[in-house]
Image 1 (tube, rainbow, N blue to C red):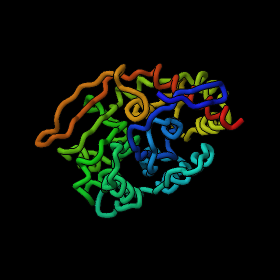
Image 2 (image 1 turned 90 degrees about the horizontal axis):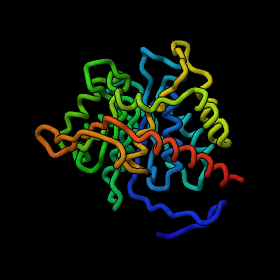
Image 3 (image 1 turned 90 degrees about the vertical axis):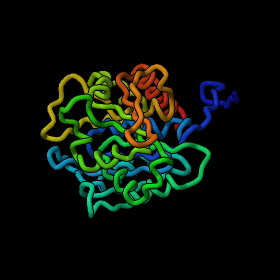
Image 4 (image 1 turned 135 degrees about the vertical axis):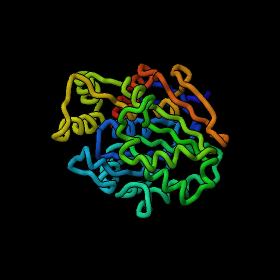
Amino acid sequence: MQQTSGPAGPTLRVAEHCRVVLDNDWSGDPDGLVALAHHLLSPANRVVAVTSSFLSSEFPGPLPRAADGAALARELLAVVGGAAPPPVHAGSEEPFGDGSASAAADAIVAEARRDDDLPLYVVCGGPLTNVAQALRQAPDIAGRMTLVWIGGSLDAGFEYNRDTDPDAAAYVLAQADLDVQSFPVETYRRCAYSVAELEHDLGTTGQLGHWLWEHFTDPPEWARIGGTWPLGDSPPVLVTALTVESSRWTSSTAEGGRGERRVYTDVDTRLLFGDLLARLRAHERGRA
């Protein structure tokens, strides 16, 4: 294991082990921005593209379009900095159907078809519109990537990401050769964070942490904020950049195909959020 030198002395060099396309409704719940920052700061995954989706018309925010989300993602990338930030592509502005072609779907197809030694994970923290469109355009990519999705439920109850575009979710999950690792609502809600802790932990970890916290302080009018805020879009970092050995899941094979259907039932929040805060602090030290 090689070492590099950091502000606090020698540090371990972490090897890349996967490529990641990050898809989310970035202008919605700001937990998506926290997850995006965490992926970008993690040396074990190489973020190759960022794509955006629209907000549900039933839960509108001031910036509901996929284009709005793309603009916010670019703003975050600028705060994170770096010599070669990944490209950002706006997704469809309407649900999966005849009019859902987009630059985001094209980017997913292009990356899935690109030859690379590192496996590709498409991490989606919102509706599956762009992923469904990519699979419809290029069915051959189903076996060339793994979808990691924050979405669905263990029962028949409402779940925002699935039900914002149910046709897209049904189309994607019907791809029998696609590997899918999902964190349903019952699991991602376990990532609850005290609002007081969130303000302290983000607000005191430098410029990037402060930028993230500011996006929690102006929720939409329909939102009622209690004492907690789930950082529900963060668990895929365990898959792409850390480890799932200390989390739990069930696994089956898709009917009629070879694709794995892994459903997480518990996540290691200590590992996940401990790493997040350490990465934010290290990023701030690097700016000094």
